Amino acid sequence: MLKSKIKASLIHLIISIIVVGIFITFALLIWYPNPFFEISGLKHIIVILLSVDLILGPLLTFVVFKPNKPSLKFDLSFIAAVQIAALTYGMYTIYQGHPVYIAYAVDRFTLISAADVNPNDAKEAELRASGWWKPIMVYAETPSDPKEQEKLIFEVLSGKPDIDARPEYYQSFEDNISKVLAGGIKPEKLFASPPHKAALDRFLTQYGKTATDYAFLRLVGKEDDVIWIWDKATGKAVDTISLTPWNL
Image (cartoon, rainbow, N blue to C red):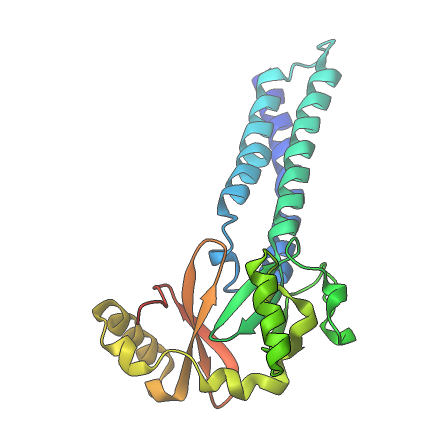
């Protein structure tokens, strides 16, 4: 009896690991590439998903499994239904929360989730995110026309999203990367804060070069805001510093 219970729960566990593992791997590699998951605010959803599908499900199978039990098929079907419901909820929540755009506007990057925008509002076809693949880097340009600026301000004050969540203002990030890398937090301000100085010293020890070779940009997430460090020479993101980018 005990051997059959253990065997059934192990089979259940292996199937759950495969299904959940495939989904989480896809989500982390495609929807939440580094460093976006850490600041997305969805860790609790992952915990719930793992708890139900990898712990509770196999445990319940161990409890109810008895060979030749009349209600065994119903019991296992019920457990499977609960797991599928939890997995569906987790998948939907993770999908809705995943960033379709990483938008740079004014002085910061912001994660713009699938639930926040309609990608079809983007003027350029290549900036219309599919929602099923990796997030697109975009640059949100403030209108130069004073009337357009005034219109935008009134729209934001009336409750519409700000420019970073308005695809109609998006431009190619690559075409504007020089503007982005020219901004950011000045290294001397980071060195003036003891915790930031310590983190920056560790970063420079690991990656080399000098602080002036990097751009220190604000990255705003759903849960945390961090400093996103870019190499000015290569125009590539290097790493993050998990300290506040504000009041520096």
